[in-house]
Image (cartoon, rainbow, N blue to C red; front, side, top):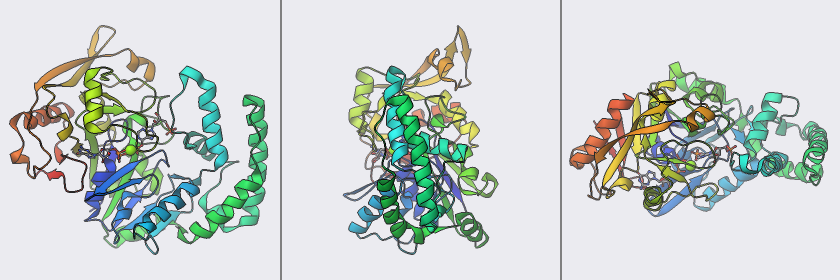
Length: 425
Ligand code: GDP
Ligand code: IMO
Ligand code: MG
């Protein structure tokens, strides 16, 4: 049985936790997109792990981890993660496979991300400055791209880096009057990267197809959220990869037809980090209450997350483009004690009602949410183990969302810990 876990909002839905839980019954966990812009939190007892590039299955010592070709890998951050896990007694030796086709994020990508964001002023995207856009741009542009396979031949890699840095320096200087980047420094770091990482580099597509033929259980871990998808999200306020379920095939060479379950993760409300339209945003006391109760501060950048009501129109759209057949709703505990809860059930756009999400940022900025108000509940959910035990109003809230989105909620989060989860039969 293969399953794919993907965010259906603007990221940070709790994918790390869901993947960690489902990894118990999986042989292999595969990250297939994004880069160190992701921050996936796994909490086991009193131990907290914040993973950026490593598949969340890494915390389980018996799980094989794959970093697919769709990931843009920052080797410095990846090595920090390996060392951090090692220091906590978790070794990846012998159970980590990195795609030789994964593209490499180097310092000039991060510099470009920062320079571009600075130059955009109030029009900036609010990126994580992890070099994601510039690295994917080099991938698409081809001539200046570096892949993990390139670490196998350091002489050729060194010459290639010199050529690229020379080009980037001319470009950064002309456009931003930026200080030059030192190619030797980058090449020196690359020697360390090679020493530490080249042993993990292989053809992961071959490995995954052999594993499928072997009837292994594979779990695919999405990064970001479908509303940040480059093609189907709120462009231009998106990330630079196909962060919806549609990114799976290109990101690791395993097509959707080979995956049985597509599990979309949502929060019981909405959040967004960075700029861009957010129709159900509550930039007021309600948003502040959600932020404080849900500890809504970015895992990667520490930025306060923008918070708002659950947008069922947005999730209906992302569930549709991902052929999502199950929803995992996290943070149900967070919305307890809020009195009434609102769910966005349609938009009005230029005086007309619509239930289809207009992903274009300009159009989306012009919609007004039409809400349905539901009664909340005050009970603490954090110790609840079964769906039956949930307060009636919590069940009504879930049912109403299922009604609009047309996908069943099968997994519920009632707290950040691995144990705080309810599986609905
Ligand atoms: P990801 O990027 O989708 O993996 O999500 P993040 O880890 O960035 O953010 C999710 C946050 O919510 C983390 O701090 C988790 O520990 C926390 N979390 C996950 N599920 C739940 C839940 O059901 N209840 C509560 N209160 N916190 C949760
Ligand atoms: P996880 O996997 C939330 C957002 C950034 C910014 C936009 C573009 O933890 O859910 P980028 O650095 O990718 O060029 O930034 O995308 N963003 C995320 N927001 N969760 C994430 O990942 C994100 N990854 C990128 O805040 O608005
Ligand atoms: Mg996150």
